[in-house]
Length: 89
Image 1 (cartoon, rainbow, N blue to C red):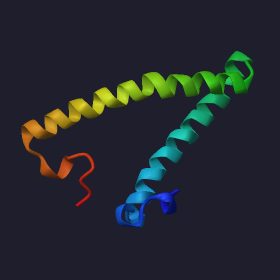
Image 2 (tube, rainbow, N blue to C red; image 1 turned 180 degrees about the vertical axis):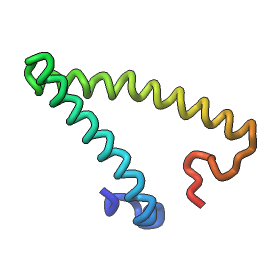
Image 3 (cartoon, helix red, strand yellow; image 1 turned 60 degrees about the vertical axis):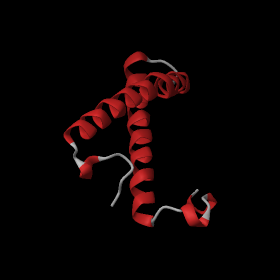
Image 4 (cartoon, rainbow, N blue to C red; image 1 turned 90 degrees about the horizontal axis):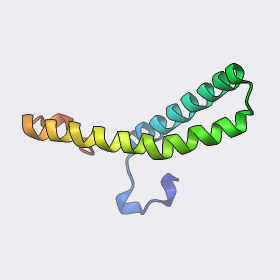
């Protein structure tokens, strides 16, 4: 995916790795939660995965958006330059 980004806008390897590792950790968490829940409920793991994915893609994104907006407001209010989102220095 990194090579699909325009050359002049490509993130450095370190930043790219940090961004993608967050996604990988989230996917691993959902996978293991899905396996655990399927053992508890004796449901089909695929249907639970679909439910987990839909909840993550809707409610999860909403919670993340609200959280980022709240933290960004606090960072701006306190003028903490090193904690601004998207500023990697």
